[in-house]
Length: 411
Image 1 (cartoon, one colour):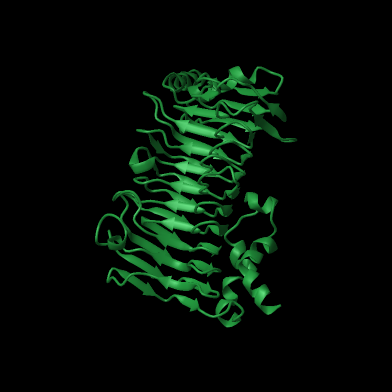
Image 2 (tube, rainbow, N blue to C red):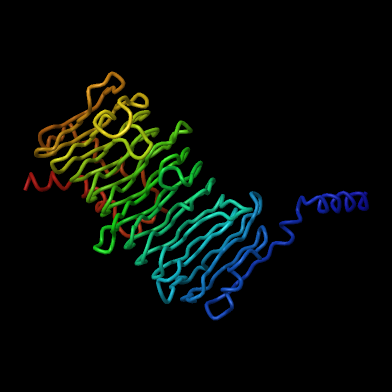
């Protein structure tokens, strides 16, 4: 019997059932070791784990990661506990990380500062970039975009960007630039969740979106991100070109220099908390995206300035088609406007339906309308204790953004 079991096990290993796991290695390296040679290239094998000791990692050479794991045995590059692992380029002539043809690769717990873009992701001729996870990173004070997936002709899938803290970018300045203009790169079936993004509005920033999902990208989830102080919208979504809609859910946004959220088409916008001087939710044609096929459901919107909580520009008043690309349903939203702001400014079109929205068009201190909107427990349900914003702001700090007008008017 023992011989038979050994024979069966050998056959299983020979067939590849456990071969990848048996080849996997664990590397423990520090900033004084030859970490560059280990990370650069495609030599890491499925299941390998690289643990980086605390310290500053700096090298002027172009760092390119092309490692490919498998669904069952991803490759992990992570920080060790006990201190910060900082990747700091000595100049801005290169991006800190270039991921080219990487697959089933996880970057976890690292800090990136200085340099050009933080992480630029693209495929190669033989290997599309896919199933890359970037989590628990701190990307700040860099000279470009934090994370990009926009190489022309590329198809990105299975990306997970979660629990990252991103602030003080430069140049175009987006935290996440996902997909390419006019559908030149497609980003799909991926997740951007529980990130804390702020201060993308400095004088060195020309744009500064928080999360931008370009035309033709589809099937993505953008959820439970906390975003404030951006120059362009905190979240910008174009259209899905007839494919699976994108979902933008339970994000917390305030204080942008533009509309807080701009969504053109093919999207579910649900359960978001937004307080803004400009429009809270804004929709108009954008590139090939024609306004329509939108479900705006259960959002808490506080319009603090002269703009609207919800503003939709009809295609006939924008560029492109003269009719909506699909129905627009605006329902169960709780809206507070202050001063000259308007609640819902939309065109007269039978494809646009408003149902069960609660609107206070006078003052925020009318508690019978707004009390349930700003209960601490309601906002806490959106954020988990692991969310990076909880390391910087308290729950009271967050709630204050949605109570500021009440405080001012009742003093």
